[in-house]
Image (cartoon, rainbow, N blue to C red):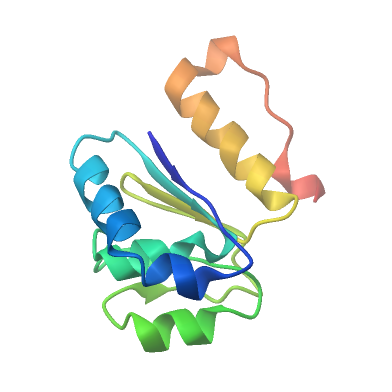
Length: 121
């Protein structure tokens, strides 16, 4: 699994070729690639999820779609987390925990993990 986190200064991260290339290379060997909040911009910059559905921080979807038109950016005010193939993304904040727990369920098996129901958020 590769987890692509957010940062307050995503501009610096997105324009760092070492980070972007690291994501591209690691994605070739992952079962899951996950982004949290504005980490979706690094996913977009790397091009690894072109043609896939993705969500970012609430209010950031328009910019993400503009900058990375090959992504299928979901309405971030309605969609809190998204799964499209091996790519999982979330708005951040509390919902990132629900997304992480769902990933753990996939990785460990239902019988080994009891999840909090995300409909209570």
